[in-house]
Length: 156
Length: 141
Image 1 (cartoon, chains in turn cyan, yellow):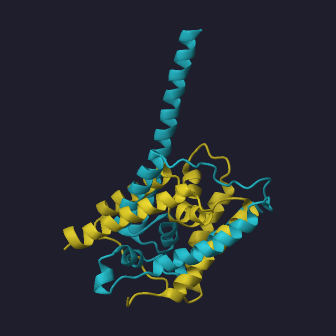
Image 2: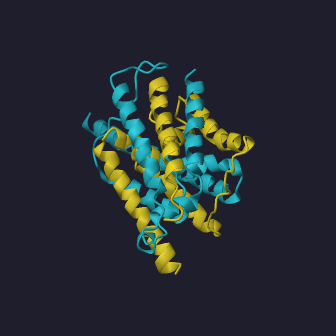
Image 3: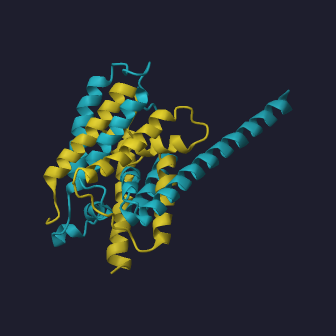
């Protein structure tokens, strides 16, 4: 049942991307191109998408905050609060990639449906980037653990 | 503002919000695409089913739209596959390092008024705006 609910949610999300035309990278770039403001070609659609999405999510989350979900014992609200270097570096790297093509993860996945070779290359590279990050993180964690184990052994 | 499509943008945005609210209502999860996808790709993840189902739904939406006679545009991408691959790597690595993307931080995080998500969204927006300014108006000419 949780997977079925998630399938429906993914479908609604995808419809939102199709209807808002955020599946078209040039539409996103039309928003990011601020030189279009003085020349009159700027496309503020993405800002409207975000505003509408935020209004619905803001109200919905406020109502759901004290409740437990239907198919799980607890809601997984994010708990991190620190505005730290990984957050800002990661956001900057993501922004550079987003600006180069005009695709972020949601539209990239939805656009796989078009079987466009460019999108397929993008999604494969994105998956490699994600896996590379997680591999790097788990290696760093293992190294730290070894160092810690070495220290406690020396103490003992 | 000849390309501005406020009505379809508002309807589409509201649907994205609805999806985020329903995923929290039913599964207690944040609708962050990079988090859902990253978890799916990580071999240590145990909760694969709902993640895979979300991705399937996301791809099924444009397919269904086409079958229903709705025109889904062919994505216009840069000519260079190297540019595309570099962008994909940056988006993948960056969203995992920064714990979110346009959906997780930009919609779900800001909706919770998370200072972390507000900061991340400002940074990726500004970075993207600078890159577009450089590629379209400085390098691209």
